[in-house]
Figure (cartoon, rainbow, N blue to C red):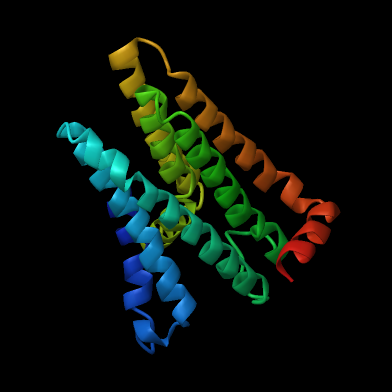
Length: 217
């Protein structure tokens, strides 16, 4: 799953960046810093999973602090990217308005934070810990999936379909190993649908316009 998620991130972000008319380095420095941190988190997640698979639990625990540092930088640069997007009137996701589109990265960061913190809280519970860390990756994957779907010129609806497919892999794993969905997997799926509801309804309410302006203006 780590390799799969990292591949989606690279396939989602690299083509649009490399095909910029004025070259990749025409983008602001913030874009590059955020991109490097974003990819690094997924790469580090994959490394951590491989350490556990190889029985190197002590190294996994020692390097766990790095994951928290990367997560903090992801949140900081993610917020700065959202402020940049808010300042661009042309920023829009799908057919959503400029303001409504701000709900997408907002819920991504919130859900990533919830899943990551729950992963830390449950670090003594291996089954819950590994699922929450995977869920943190899935729940913040939306920007990469959106760009990948745009690159292959697939319908916008394919974004949630692809993301639900990732949840399907996790719950399928649960059914094979546990014969039932793990509670952490169900909680992650609940966060996904809560974000979906927010994007489809709350994002179109006048109150969200006031909140978005307060947060990002």
